[in-house]
Amino acid sequence: MSYPARTLAVFAGYLVLLGITLLATPNLLLTTFGISPTSEVWIRIVGVLALILAYYYVQAARKEMINFFRWTVHARAVVIVFFVAFVFLGWVKPVLILFGAIDLAGALWTFMALRSSRGLE
Image (cartoon, rainbow, N blue to C red; front, side, top):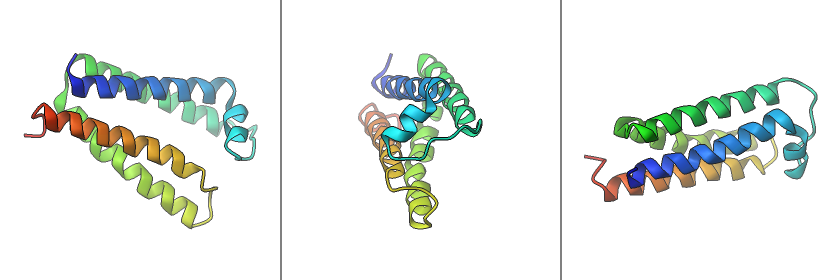
């Protein structure tokens, strides 16, 4: 597995942990970060989406899908913009920016891995 592929595999691991937590014990995660607990199903839906994304990331990493790696850099980098906007608009607590920062860090790691392996050409 190439270095860029490994960055996606690691990020997929993060998504699996997040997805399982949101499915099994969503309020544990929410209250840990100072977010009000919920009994609504939306948080578990987000968990399912995280697991589906993790599946895509793992499969793309296994198949060395360089174009997909590049797309994830763009998509993960923009997450922080939306999360900061949500905080600025008063829709969520600032702790959400931490999750956006994780996405941004993952995007930068993949970007640097692609660059070092000439995957950006």
